[in-house]
Image (cartoon, rainbow, N blue to C red; front, side, top):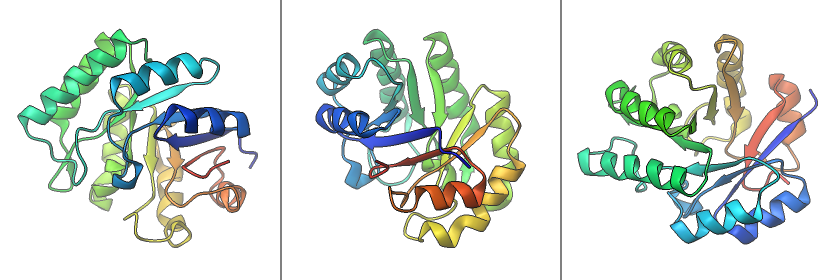
Length: 211
């Protein structure tokens, strides 16, 4: 399968430029990649949107590291972040709220609705991997019904090598709604990206060392 999208996870405008110049054709902008990616600061968002104006830039909306079960204050921070990103000219955001290994549909619906009001496209990030496997298919359909067309997933816990999780990823690829793209990530790099794309029959891959 020919790879058409190489999405690079970065945590600075300099890294975004370097990845774009090396061939990345979509950027996921974060801070603190060591924590799995958090919301970047305002200056980084502004500078990256100015510097990277020829390929899509997805902005992480995640107030802290750790799990994805956010309290009311953190959820309000996420709503505020959506407003800020829209005000700065952003167009794509990624987030996920998962509680007790289930998608927090109430919180997600509120965030997705706000993003839609702001004309922001939503991507579900790797919080998806914290959802019980037997709930993932119905979750994909719920996300599809609410306008989420792409899901970033490792296919399991990030500590597990991605090649060990290819069977799980294949199930997601095979059972996803027709309008949802499964985006494999976590441990994908320039050396193994094509092998993984071929094995799964996907054309989009994600990683911090994707190019």
